[in-house]
Amino acid sequence: MRMGAVWSLLMSSQRPSTNPLKEVLRAASKTFPGRSTAQGADTVALVEALARLRLDNLGIPLPEDDLSSPSNPAEVRALAGKRPHLRYLSLDETDDYSMGVFFLPRYSRIPLHDHISMSVASKLLYGTMEVSNYNLLDTDPAEAQTAGSRVEHVSTIVRSDEGDVHSVQTLSPGFANVHEIMACTDCAMLDIIGPPYSQPLRSCQYYELRGGDQLVPIDEPRDFRCRSISMPAVSQRVAELLDEIALERDAP
Image: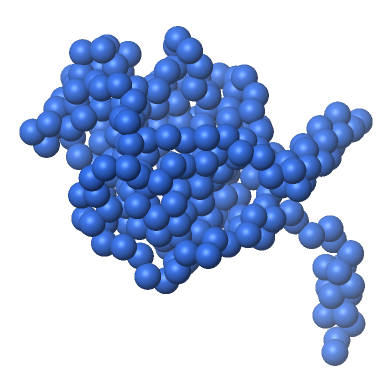
């Protein structure tokens, strides 16, 4: 082996390994520095960090569900009656953004809802889901929450964690800002929202789609429930990484 190659190997072994979760946390703080614009945040660096993130970086176990056999999205959409409840694990929350993991059991859904003046980047950690995205037309988003709005269908995407280009997805204040999510298997999705939901300026409004292009505001659907959960080991891992980032930022 040539000396140059040996030196390269020695130097690479001395470099600290990059922690994908730490890079996501660092990118989130830089992406949402407290300024909100009509165009939304520049999420390029955050999306790149999310693309490298894996489930084991968080220390979250896989579910017992057979992830290789997703249900047909039409079957999930047509399900009537009681749906399984979602769970939400908060990882980090500031005045500028919120970060957490949604756990969606097979056949559950997040109903059609909006993200007023927000940018969102999400990473599907495991599972398969169908996401339908819409743009508001002709209406101020705040007015749409009370009066409704015409919408255009942007896309309906089946997202999978298996190396799918759609495993990371973004939306902005002016694009795909209303969406609905259907779980075709058990799913875990990491969501980063900036700025976060906040009453009364940025509340979450649910809708019913009528005639294919008309949003009608509705109360929270009865078949939708989401409860907060704790995972102490995951929370401790995140807290330690946030402390490291703060020390690095404050270092001379």
